Length: 249
Length: 288
Image (tube, each protein chain N blue to C red):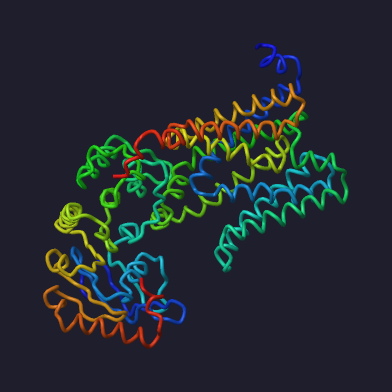
């Protein structure tokens, strides 16, 4: 066990009905590490994040956060359940990130309102504060959600495919936000499918195919041999179970 | 003019009581209706309104046409259905709309049947369509209490209900309070429906919640403005509906709901937020 791990997965196993989605996963993420989760479709990448935040219960093994509190874990799911038609502005949706400070009853004070403004500015959305979320493009909404994430001030940030359906300009801006988190010593775990992005920006990689394939420095993990092994492992269980699509999370 | 709009209220106490009752109902119904609409729960609200009927009917069977018996029965039935409909949608293969439709039909049939066991058609009509022109002190007091309680609760839980409506998954990742927000909201809807059905009837009461909210959507963008406009529309429909019912001797519950319906239809055409004319005359809203 690594001293000062921000996230420890020990023998983590998750089933969906009779179908295994994750099997005996062991991994320790060091405090302040920037890690990409990579794997073929149906490898259990999203399931891993959902299990870490407690949305899915493991049937065996456990997740622990080292010295972190549960409230210091922030999570951005792949498919946000945000109701896009709801008449609410960018500023209001970003302010929701202050929930841990405000609770259900508090109102943001002057300092917190400034924080909201700064977060909106940091994701390049200055000037769009009063825009309704229904009028945002996919990239703009993702920027707003990153601003909300900024305000949550998590010590461990989990991102599920954060660059899906996002334009190149947004991708660059959001990667800059992630790098700022990284330089502030925040631990980040992001599910990504684009290996170019992973190689360019993520020092650590966790390659999974339901089971752990490899974990370590990206250059050593993302080798041709490893990724082929991962897709073979996933295909093998897909053939066996005829149901990879069901666990395609 | 004065004769047409003011005199009925000046002259007759039952008209003043009806006006007061309707305004109180509109104040509680406006915010709940807006949230029902924004949460895409309009149909759920409709079903809960009907679900109250068998409860009220059993209350009627036991206690006769008494305020407390009807109210108590209605509240119990409303809560049971609010819990059950969510449970059935989550645990069986039936989709929520189908499970709601079954509730709606069973409740209505059951309610009508139970009332007709003991009562006559007049009682049935009273329960289905309300008796806003015969509101007694007890009914008015109940309305005032429920509306006050609703306002205070909503003020207290506004952020909770708002976040639970906009992004339930996000709230769930932060706090366990989401479920409390959800069920408290449903409970407030039930309370308002029960308190209001004495006036508007169990078939009509949901109309004064949903129609003004749907109409407000054509005029406002933010949640606060939506609630304010929904209240104004609800209040105006109540007054105009009451007057129409007075002058043309038509039943007042349906007259109020039809007035609200008329406002909805007008807004559908001339509303500036996505009404028919505004969407067809300007360029479609830019979604970028």
